[in-house]
Image (cartoon, rainbow, N blue to C red; front, side, top):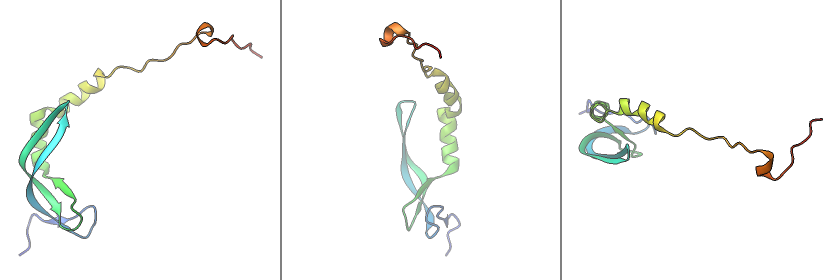
Length: 97
């Protein structure tokens, strides 16, 4: 019987992705996050894995990922520009033509 949760594999276009359980492990804000028994769809031909969208959305709301991404971008140090004058480079300034 055809499984209603099976879909064509987006990578190989040959196999079918079937539901199963796996452990979701990622690094989030410098912390290792491990979620056991999360639904994952695995291709029976190429092994492609895709985690359940609803489970990932719930995890994202629990971790507050939408709030932290904006803060992380602002927290990065701004690149500094090098300001050299002629005494630091050891060369005299070039005369203008």
